Length: 491
Ligand code: NAD
Image: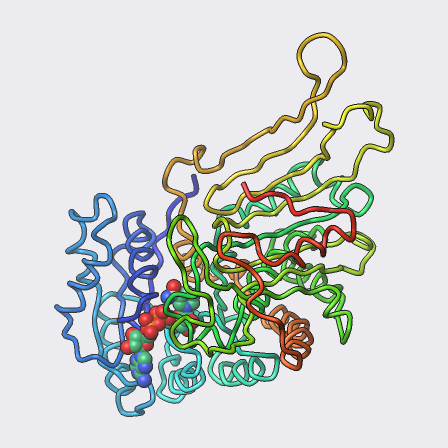
């Protein structure tokens, strides 16, 4: 157990009355407080357009943390650090009041000028807020200044560049923390340990021993009330550009010389640079898109995507993507990385399956049961790893049977696996940007995605093409079948 160090900072949350702030940020801040990472020397300003008082805001914070065990006892002290400032981010004048409050709290809590700005609101405001933070002197203090921003980071490479340039007017690259909450998940961070702390794994982690890698991020829910956003984004931009390509880069990267932010990023960027960019027909060959139709799932009737609120009745937006990615470097040449993600699928899970090549000669070939070795990394809802192997069936003869060696992470560390947001906020307070996306990664990902999106936008797909409760359209299975593989079932 590492020693807990108190982080001194003023945390300003833009969008302080929103869903993300209530569901994720306030509970995460409470956890950091209960563990001592936030203690006496911190203050939080929530800003949004509504005219709330400090008292009302504090009651809302209390409400947001009420389900956390043991929070009753400390809630009053915790919420006393919270302040509310009604503020329209497009109105220059209200930054003056916000700046005065910031300076006052800095003095009151001895925050040493450390400032973290969390932009928990729609991305079209990011540029305005960043330039006001700069012009109104919020970052003229002597401490650190860091900016956390939420996805989506742009809609394509051009808009991402524009957004980045507007942020860079006020913040250096090393002050910008682009959050990808998947990178805060325990088992995603475990990928580096599984790979680099186990010689039996790392020595096999290449195209001589691995036949293919499969990454699945599947959801049971449909688009819910996010139709308007989703129509613009689709699964490709919402899930593949960020979360999936981040996971692929962690799986594919070379061994960094040290586990420092810069060295890990350097290797992730190199992996993304090796990603084969598809053009024209290659997009149709290697990428499959799907959209859910109406159907029954768990006994409940569900509308198709085109019937959801704020969705075009003739929508060409994909709610499912499967693809075969190729990493053209010495380690991975010839090894497909299959990825898939979608809504209204049979199971909610995030899982990575690493399929090892078969033994060179099957001495047990008369038996059908000799299964390939697969290492499964369970990210969520289960956390752990499973190694699928073959052993001898007890008794006479040499019959084989498959067994699973399981490590269930959640049961090892108890119930308190830190939430991704809690870890990432603490990382940011500590100045550790390892599990945030660097601009180089974001721009390479967008470049890759733009090629796919461009082809898809020019061709209309025959949607809907999958039923709720399935694992997507048949073409997603065919993508693997044509290479002699199958999707590993989601466990
Ligand atoms: P939300 O609509 O619930 O909240 C938006 C907040 O912005 C509200 O507090 C609102 O009052 C404030 N706001 C809007 N216009 C304003 C203005 N002109 N001036 C000042 N305040 C203004 O949105 P959300 O779900 O909390 O999402 C916020 C951001 O986080 C979005 O970029 C979203 O894509 C991203 N995000 C959210 C989630 C989630 O779980 N909710 C997950 C991932 C990413």
